[in-house]
Amino acid sequence: MQRSTRRTVLVAAAAAAALGLGAVPAAAQGPEAPTPLAIPEPTGAYATGTTAIHLVDEDRADVWVPAERRELMVTMWYPTADDGPTAPYMTAEESALFGAQLGIPADLLAQVQTNSVPGAEPLADDGSLPLVVLSPGFSFPRATLTGLAEELASQGYAVAAVGHNYEAPISFPDRTTECITCEDDIDGDTLVPNRAADLDFVVEELEAGAWDGADRIDFDRIAVGGHSIGGASAHRTLADYERFDAGFNLDGTFFALDPKPVREPFLMVGAEAHGQPGEDDSWDKAWKKLRGWKRWITVDGTGHSAMTDLAPLAEQAGLNEDATDGFRSSDIARTYVTAFLDAHLRCEDEPVLDGPSAEWPEVEFHNP
Image (cartoon, rainbow, N blue to C red; front, top):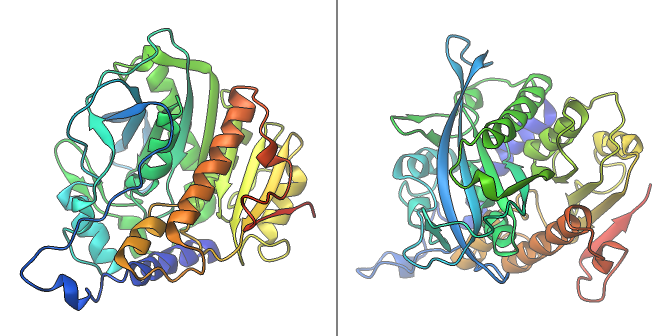
């Protein structure tokens, strides 16, 4: 197994331990149900809506199951003026499968509270919403990037989080598929270019009107990013496809590092240990191939999944194993990713990207 893929699977187990849900606290075992875990509220000016779309690439066989066409599920988040009940975090089937993978109760993640109204009417019918395409870590459902996606939508972005079939539990309209790639050794050099093709295909389908709200999107302003191997896939997407304008990687080893330089702006956000120069030689190599605006930062007191929803969910469960508070980790991810996107998709001045900040002392800048 490739080093970072094995690492990601082990991190999933560590995330379960961090959530502390394999051993539910005694206070939660009594007759009264515990308070459901919740995604922290976004801070932007807009309420957020969400919807899911099912895509099939008829021109491409699934690399894992070649007898099938490549299928994806995509969750869209976007600004709205609508109010109402919020969408589920995961389906019951996704929650059960991912829960079994982590060793946590089957229904726990299906009960997590979100902040977005399903099927809400999108704002900005003038096609002015920049688009951010997200790819989750290996074995992680796309729902684990919900907090970041809701934050960006509340700030006026359209967000598309991609569920890559057979690489995590995914509920389609007619069935739920398992993470069959979790059962065997995975070649990251196959997975990453395939994900890049997935991400490009999603934008192509959105441009063709796969989502009813696609006319709200400004397809001249598109960023791509992700967690773990999703971040590596974002980098490869920029190397392979021209339609993307900026990218970011949240603590992912750069599998399948393309020999071509990447000239678009790129943000590398590392966990305390893994993100240090010299710890993962793929980061040092990727840094040297970045020819445009670039930043390399690490966040003290954080582990591999701190930039995902697992950090604030673990904090709520009372068993966050990171030194940094899980809500604080979430705030840092939202702040720096939003600033990066505002700077490069909206041409706004973002001093937080210029160097160390008194407001965010955990964030360390590198320039090896």
